[in-house]
Length: 369
Ligand SMILES: NC(=O)c1ccc[n+]([C@@H]2O[C@H](COP(=O)([O-])OP(=O)(O)OC[C@H]3O[C@@H](n4cnc5c(N)ncnc54)[C@H](O)[C@@H]3O)[C@@H](O)[C@H]2O)c1
Ligand SMILES: O=C(O)C(=O)C[C@@H](O)[C@H](O)[C@H](O)COP(=O)(O)O
Ligand SMILES: [Zn+2]
Image (tube, rainbow, N blue to C red; front, side, top):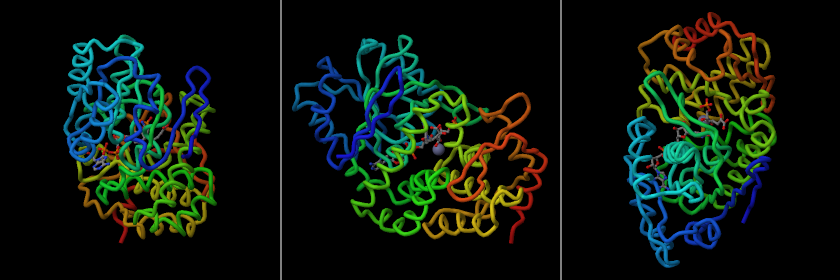
């Protein structure tokens, strides 16, 4: 088992990574589950695939699982589902010292984590991530949020989980499209700060996506180590270090907003396109060789991800996309810092980006042949 510590001063915790962890859920959470009733939040698909197994593991240890099963998909990250989840937790009598389990992808983790952050001003929660994206990214680091009509993750809190158990076996039932979307966030760690890991992705990405166990474990553990290092250094995204994890997200969140946070474009798919745009924009500004930017695009395209904005068939212009970006949480007194690259593995925060230039760049991308 790989164990990655997340060394946050006030609330350190571990990410444990291995196939079969959910069957061993209770021994791993033993000291944390203090009551017979265990609140557990999930979505319909995850419940169908893994509900019986988790239910059995909890019951075998004398617990009574109390399930909250939400609709699958991004629309569950909403005020409506947040308020009904909080009311449900209150009805169950959840106390601050209790632990709520979040069994699912980033949607369930972000929503449950936010509910835990505000319930009685903060109760505990445990992340049981079931998508590649959630295992490598969203379950670690304590960003929790819902979406609003104005944009992505605009209401939320930093609230760290008490423990993360990433069971690699659950990826067996994950649809290929979701696996691929999660792969975009894996590649992100290479592009941010680890060119050797990007080269590893070039060599092993296909094996990882086709389910080779060793490759999965290496990719998840390497990604989590990278994220844990960054989060430990800058938990609340104040110094600029954590903002690097936003590579591809300023473009990506704008595309998610433009496509209505719908299944037209999954978060990871938006991030993949966003990273291509960040790479090409870095090249346009002279930070990165055009050939390196095209290497990023071809790597993602060969894996099966979208790498061309034109593939979305959007009926909008660059200015519309920049309009969505004005809601980005990095916005600072009228300027929007962008995560750009000085090369593969060399991300940096550019604070002098001219949004008219971004708009012109996007117009060119939207018209690209
Ligand atoms: N908090 C963070 O740091 C952070 C980081 C990255 C992304 N996110 C957020 O995460 C969300 C995306 O997460 P996601 O990609 O995991 O999507 P998701 O939670 O919607 O899960 C994807 C789909 O796969 C299904 N599924 C999940 N696990 C399964 C399994 N093992 N077997 C079968 N089906 C399964 C789900 O029901 C859903 O339909 C976005 O809202 C994004 O903003 C947050
Ligand atoms: O953990 C972080 O920090 C990240 O930026 C990880 C991203 O992959 C994730 O999508 C995050 O939710 C985006 O951050 P946001 O602050 O723009 O919502
Ligand atoms: Zn993301």
